[in-house]
Image 1 (cartoon, rainbow, N blue to C red):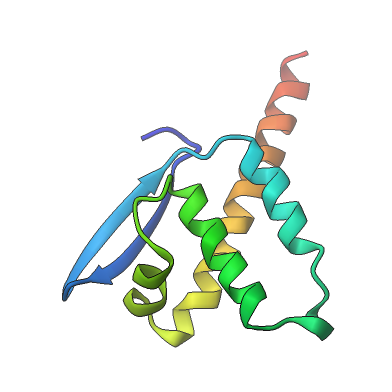
Image 2 (cartoon, rainbow, N blue to C red):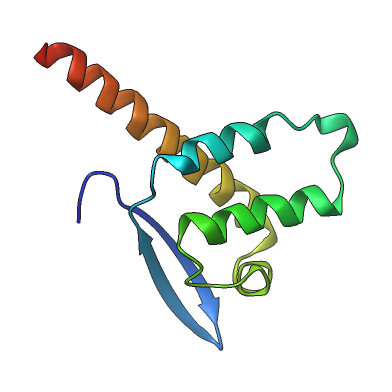
Amino acid sequence: MSKNTVIIKLEIDGKERTFTAEPKFRMIRRSAEIGQKSSDTFGPEDLDEQVGFLTEVFDHQFTIDDYYDGISSQDGTREFFRIIGELNGNTKKTLEETSKNE
């Protein structure tokens, strides 16, 4: 696994499944788009957009419904923000490493 690999575990059909992805840089842009949403107007459609984003990150290896039904209510939001953090953290780390090598 590369240092840019992200992992998520979901329960699907009663079994825990592990999904891995090596997201493209476009996902950083998409995370910025989603992050611009105001929490004052956050609604069900926004939640669908966040979960849809996760399916994009993982190259549609699972569906929006797989995510909603395969993760606990406590972990659903936490995992979303963890993955966003990993995407942005990996980018920041790569930039820092690149500037050290120049």
